[in-house]
Image 1 (cartoon, one colour):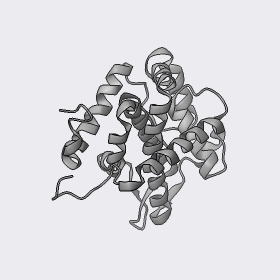
Image 2 (spheres, helix red, strand yellow):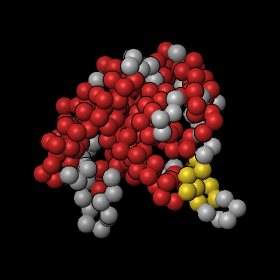
Image 3 (spheres, one colour):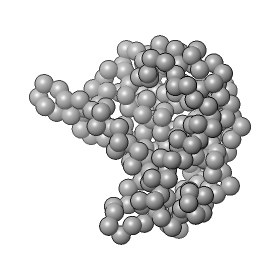
Image 4 (cartoon, helix red, strand yellow):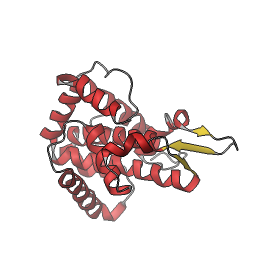
Length: 220
């Protein structure tokens, strides 16, 4: 880690570039973020983590080094692996895309609501501590996503193929119908394109904060 840089985590690093565009101010000038946007952010971070976890599944101990857990790396890996398995079991069926999979289970775990309820609560304003709590949950989603991708590489690829290649428009329309804030049309991309995109983002972070991992993660 560079001595003149604060040891922020990879999820925080990625969020810093897009979070300002997601924040709003109310009539009193207080900052807030809407629940639907946080859930979309959580799904994006989970998916990005899953892509990286799949690509680096044979180098997982090195990936965990980025999270500053020192001697508790085995416990850290075990805990988040269990969380990924728990989410998949909770979902109760084979997930077809990351936005629906993550948002539906996030709602169930953290609000007790169902996906069909999202359009009614997506615009809920999250101020101060409440907003910070939800953003912390979004950051944790990426860690769990890494474990998901490393444990279920074939399922991860199948979800990405379905989301971006096979039935992309149907999956995208379904997500938007439930109020998940995505672009009007799915990006025209392949799984290989998505992998390159995620690795490029991770490369920028590793170079800045964990240069000692550059060669080990194949980022040189």
